[in-house]
Amino acid sequence: MNITRIPVTNMRAGRPFGITGICIHHNAGQLTARRMAEVVQSRGVSYNYGIGSDGVVAELVAPGNRAFHAGDGVGVNSRGNDRSIGIGVSNSGGAPNWPVSPANFEHLVELCTVIARQQGWRQLTLGANGNLFMHRDVRATACPGPFLQGRMTELRDRVNRNLAATNTPAPPVTPPTPPAPRPPAPTPAPPATTSGFFPRATGAGIVAALARAGERDTSFAHRARIAAANNIRNYTGTAAQNTTMLGLLQRGQLRRANNPASPANPAPSNRYFPRASGSGIVAALNSIGINSSFDNRARIARANNIANYRGTAAQNINMLNRLKAGRLIRP
Ligand SMILES: [Zn+2]
Image (cartoon, rainbow, N blue to C red; front, side, top):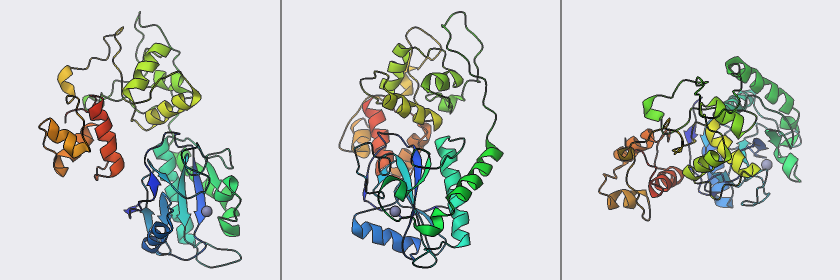
């Protein structure tokens, strides 16, 4: 589907609590996508996505950042702002029913399908503890109004049919095995251009998912090395840390870590830029004599699996963090 980017700056960068659901809102009004962006910008709030009365689907705040849509706090592990992707849908009429046009309901089905695929969710489940819920499920509000409230089951079912059509059967879970004798890898090695990252994988937990991604060492010690390589500090195996790792793995964004006990994942020393820091990615690249033009940053982003580089704050911070850790892959 075509998603137009209309940036709104009311957000908090990053997803330290992971992404565990989609939160559905209505506008309580009829707003084009651009007008919706202006209105939320001026009010100090935001959605991750807006679906306008003009049928435009807009990304207002990149899903890797937290938008201010649910009023349930930010930085406190809240179910709405901190952990969900918020979608605001324009109405096609007013009170009391607050309807949404058939075309925009179709857009909503498609957008939720895209998000579920990006997040590696095999299906949506409804309700405050599921991964598809309404604003009113997490806060005392009438949002998203009677019309959408009455269509949530249909929304879930339609998205799940789309997902079922594309889900591949789950590969058998390979139990963790000691490094010798070497068992056959459950999945083929990723292509060389992405070998800094595990292939996308999911599972009931991080251990099962790592095994599916072909990692032979799922021990605590090695998971701690993987955590460190992904800026997850002081790994003690908490649910939150494992959920963060699993989220990265599901998105194909989990960096591999060298395992001193296994020569299976060699990383030539010239594969990465030397560590560098600065007030931003441009300054940091300049400090080690690397061309920091947009085009060259886009090449570096591609080599590091940062998709659709547009120079957003989140993308630049991501690159800078890798560079600081000495894990920014040369293109
Ligand atoms: Zn709402």
